[in-house]
Length: 394
Image 1: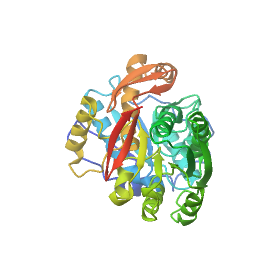
Image 2 (image 1 turned 135 degrees about the vertical axis):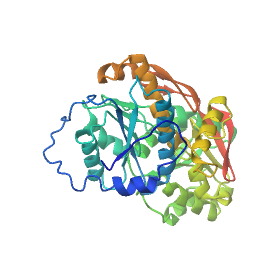
Image 3 (image 1 turned 90 degrees about the vertical axis):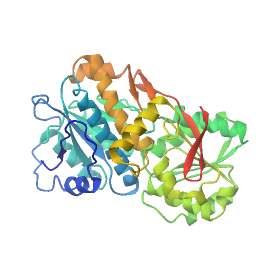
Image 4 (image 1 turned 60 degrees about the vertical axis):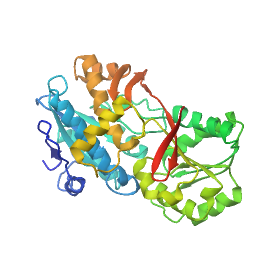
């Protein structure tokens, strides 16, 4: 099976993402899935290993997070298997490309369930993919969605553990209003569900803080000509530009933002930015750039220090810098481990019930899932060259 990578006991090695991508992007080309009916699959749990199908993106704008996401899930698999697996079952990992045409991604998910017999799907990809995949997984197998997202996910079987606007953006907006006296806001985001829904919430929080929105636009994913957007921003004269652009689109926009002189006079607040994106933007273009997130690798804590030591020990000192999106794949499996231990079984019903109220430990320390929503420390950081500096726990 091309899509499966088996991991033995801890040993310190990395699986090249390029190899996985070459194999997995074509994994379904020669398979006939036309006879598969929705809701059908082979009997789960008949094999001794717990098969995890992880949908990651290695292409397009969010593909920048593919390497760190892969490293993070490999580290989690290595550690959990070193402890004897989950409820005595060794984890077996399959990684699938979640970029490209949506029909191809859905086809890979159908293959993962019907032919590769994965027991659970985990995803770190854009919300548009989640909306498509949850139709495939519903009433069939559990689906853990790990990164920051727009909130409001209640599909049966889907467990979303990432940051949401109420807990991520709201306190950051109030801080900028109170401390920086920001009142005029311009919103720019990628043209898909996460920015659409996040902006709806953000507008309420801006109004709460006494501000107003002076402009808003959504940019096609993959757009790299930002001159028209920057011209409209200059004309609107905002105090803050709230950025909901994804991956490399955020890099090209923020580079252009700095190069045209706006960074010196206008604040920026980003919601899906991490250390990988910051490196791409470059130190010359990060003035007045803020980010709110539940994870930064600069956070000083015992849990994060230990995580980074293990990450660098496995992948070396020059591994891609770990950030929120990549690290979420590590926590996705730690979350599963805790939920399974609480349920005492991997059967879907009891597992999903336990997952709604559970405490798990990851790089961020203890995280509480209460009534299906993750409660975690939230940080506001300011870009300092090529690094983030946490200025407040919000």
